[in-house]
Structures are given as C-alpha cells and as structure tokens.
Length: 88
Image 1: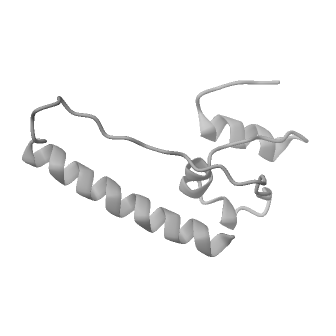
Image 2 (image 1 turned 45 degrees about the horizontal axis):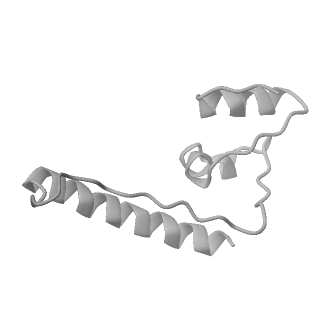
C-alpha cells in the first residue's frame, strides 16, 4: 500500500506497475484518463455522492467576489455531474 496526496503520482505508479488506485471521480476527470490507453476506469457500485458545502459568517451576505465564486462553483458542479451522468 502507498499513500500520497498527489493524484498524478498515484496514476504514474499505476501506469508502470500492476497496481490499482481508488480515486475520486473529479481526479479522474481532471487527469483525462479516457485518452490514456494504459489506464482503465472501473466504477465502484453503488455510486457514492460527494457533497461540497460553502460557508461564510452567519448574519452576513457573501461579498460580491464570494457570490460570484459560489455561482461559478455551482455551474462547474452542474457541468461535471451532467458529464458524469453521460458516462454511466
């Protein structure tokens, strides 16, 4: 067993050896594994959803920058979930 915080390190080790890795879908999507013939992705069943939360001080509205960040994060999450659903 080998642990590291670097997904690229994990994927490199799997590419050159008989090892396997369990990674979050976002790491797999970001690495564009679909174009790498040396790697194969197998989905774990049942699927587990990851919940992501945004926090800010109570009683305050988010700043304009924070509000825009929330909008962008929501748009990207929707695009990624749509892409993931097409892969199922």
